[in-house]
Image (tube, rainbow, N blue to C red; front, top):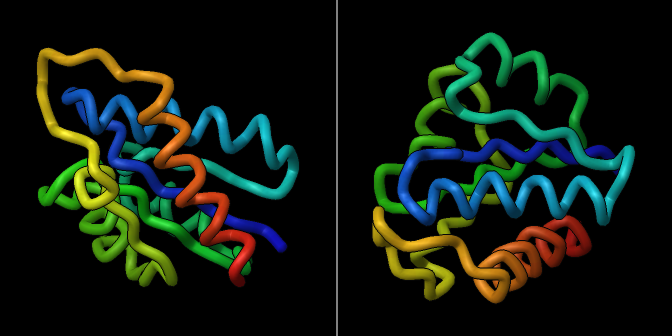
Length: 115
């Protein structure tokens, strides 16, 4: 199964967390996951999701940058995850912690295994 992960990859800790999670997921699922940042734009998102069996939008916060950009590209993610809904506190000055990466990565991997 091929999975495309769309991340917000913003500047706050939860945005940076989505980037870190994507990097870890790529290492744990080599060749099965494709990653695209929301900032890449609608065309890149549409290209990255074409032919994917599962599309996951990983947002950091309620701004939903990844999900919003997916919608602009005409893509409806089958799974939408938000770091703050997984218990991560948004703080623009905070560093991403490994425990947070583990928490969010587990949610992403669980979503891929349930499909």
